[in-house]
Image 1 (spheres, rainbow, N blue to C red):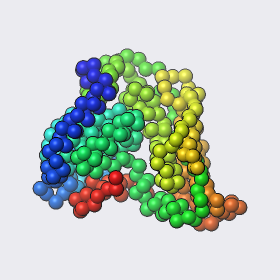
Image 2: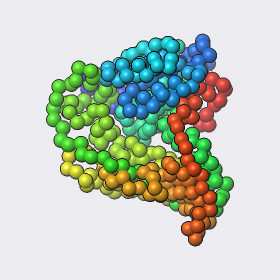
Image 3: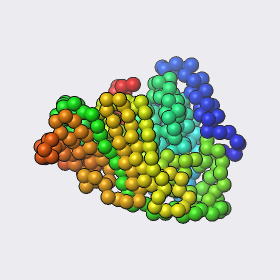
Image 4: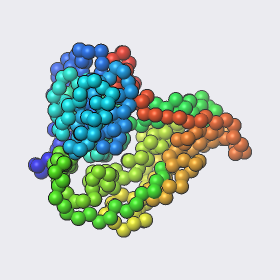
Length: 372
């Protein structure tokens, strides 16, 4: 954005807009969210990376229609429109400003796959405009933004789902249910992890903004910084100004599994240590990190290795739970239950896709309501 507004100011303005529209009452907002057709009308906001996975998932559902493809990268818009055209008779409209989607009363819901610093502002504005929201992980750039999202969802009675899609995988649900049913007895600890094999991002240089990019809109609510040639489209993850590092990027998946399995809410204390060890470059976030979450009678440890792919349990992402009767190793390829003698008791093979998590934007029409 061309003005000097800070992220805090932008979010305050978004919250005020949300509060103002709430005076219309829940009935008005619910009517605005319903399209006259039997299909859920969608707008996809952000079409690089995860956004294309969103498009694919929604196109697999017969009762959804993608009306808009939005991205500040004109090449991504073209790619998204082309993907929709292969499976949907109605052509999607391409826009670069998400507000054009929010202005359309025919749109029921939006699916957000922007950089992290846009997640909260886009979600809050969408709720205020009467749209249901699926937003990629992490749900926000910081904790306070998450509180504002929850407040907006409550005020406007919108369904807001964050992209922890493992909660929709049947075999993961079965494994978590085994924990909750007491197969391990009392639970007291979980270790979770994410590993990858990322290279150096180098040292960026000032460069002209590419013709295909609206860099002002890309920065959005974040204070402006000059364009450099090693920011887009992925390396922004490793700058605190826009991203949240590996813990926010992928660690949230296994950390969510750990909290879910142990039945926990917020920790009373968090400690974290790590650094950028592997390369001397522009990256600000750690490539090696260990975080401990203290819940009093239970604890979680998350370990991240961005530059060494060797994980645990034969998987790059997962969580292992420990209880008085044994342990359960939950990874992306399977879950295994062991007794205290380290003997395998039973195994649940894993198979997953993202379609199930996309069903939320459809299910609200059938009268389903989220637990809040």
